[in-house]
Image (cartoon, rainbow, N blue to C red; front, side):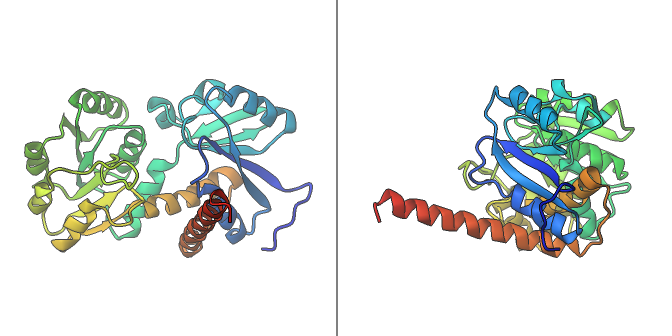
Length: 307
């Protein structure tokens, strides 16, 4: 589709702070083009404490909606008129529609991860799943995996109390067998022995966090048929994925989660279903956004050097 800006164009803002490294607006616009939807996503820095003023502007201008990254995924909730049970339970929203005077929110992180895993041919029904971490993204991801039919789920976290809290939330909605525990080399090995699927939801291995697994020996305990899904996007192959692949265990990084989330985004914002060919367009858009980011960094470096 050749984009046209007219009175029918749907406007969505991508908000957060910082947005310098954000790729979402480029990705969303590629998805709108693929789906032949007359819509536009625009980056808008909204600092902590400024969300209320931004939402007033959304209502005054009758903007169609907005998409959210840090630090607003929880802060937006008091402003919403409607939200689904899982988003409310885990206090996380990353997409909002403004329809008929109402703000309607949802979280799509979990859907993205579930679809990414299923796209690799993994049937989650009846599976024993090992979840690593109990942070903000974990609840929605674990909930979607439970929706898909997982029968057992261990949730390990460095602070076991957080794992227990998250399991308590999951037990309100799902009948699977849940096992919260501390994340130690010993517990990782114990639960890995029976895991069909491992989902890594911590920042361990993330490029800019400079923290990683101190001990990956649990990977040696995984059954040969196991599958590993890592939420981390950068680097593309984390130490966990490299360790799994060295043993012939299949795995995916966070790219799949991010791209498959776009299928759900198009349905939520625009009511549009797309075929699976959208994935190639999404992957291309991410690499385009990364190239644009690199070019901007080079330009800024030249300017800083007075060239």
